[in-house]
Length: 437
Ligand SMILES: *Cc1c(COP(=O)(O)O)cnc(C)c1O
Image (cartoon, rainbow, N blue to C red; front, side, top):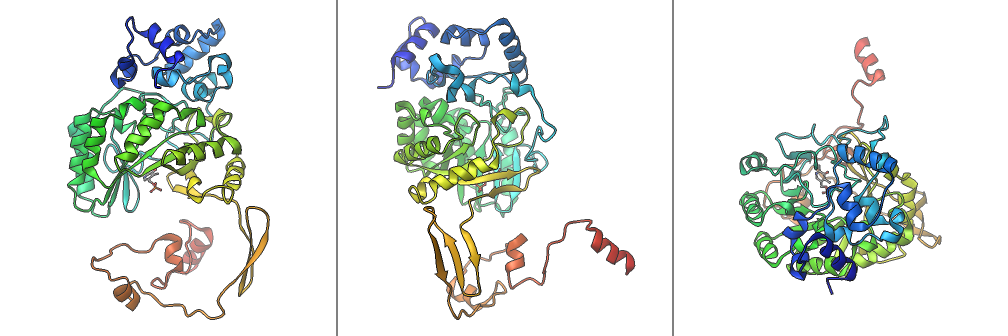
């Protein structure tokens, strides 16, 4: 059943002759998205006082409001102040607080952008901002500086700049379309963009990051799925943050995508008073895997402007991971990551499981608190590898030249490099050496 009483009541208020087919029509949903405080009050019956209204108007002046009727229908009106959907969709005056530690672009996505629309941070993959619009403006959006600022759909010519960059950069084997929401583009534009990327010989996989299954599930139409199917291998990551978001409508959208053959993942953001609870998170990951979605990342909330009320200490994330690892299916647990401010990329963090170590034994603890030992081998002959060793050539059977070099800590560990340490630029001690030389 996709049309419950709350939805029927909303549809009646929005449209004079509401039909079930309208409610389930994603274009109808977009056309009737809630973008003003008055509309929100009228549709929900929630009333704010004059002071609250003034504060909210100020907030929406800076960070606009947009909620699909579907997502609005998930809010519990009788207890909206504590409602996880309300908190993600509606916001308040606290968004206007900016801390010194916050930035417009905390991940330096713009600095790592070789051409408009592309963030090239990791050696072999890029983030391609394929759209600047979303069907619902998440109050916790890390790209608040961009999304919704001007409703802007990139033209083919603008997208072509990104496509050219990918074409001219043979290291890129993985293209991640994000935004905004790529599924806000019309079907034919999606078809065109995917076919352009698919034609690039060195691109091995395409990924799409979207919140559509959560906030506008009716966008996942049979036609969209049949377009996407032409571009396998295609991986799709969505963004559920709370079990209340898993409804009959979102389940149906996920089933269409899973039946289409796309591996599905989920990226949650850890949000204070929304999902900062081991029990909520466990229920969420269980519901996700029941719908064939594998939890991929749990993000520590970024240092974007106006998100201080959403942030938790990192310890909360560790506590949640502690409650999942070992306690539930391995594929039901995400990797908890902090996206490094300044653009260092995602850094995984975990509870500690190694307690101690000797030359031949490791002492570990498990999720129950049992302390155990692992006996290491008495003899292990390390194999020297200069990245062109017998094992590389014989056992790995490399038929294509691997041009990547070891970098970072990987390089420190490798046999093929003489480097023994990584030294920060302008290190005082090294400078002294050079001065004295
Ligand atoms: C998250 C991200 C990716 C993809 O990272 P994975 O860990 O491979 O999922 C790529 N580029 C940028 C800029 C990112 O933020």
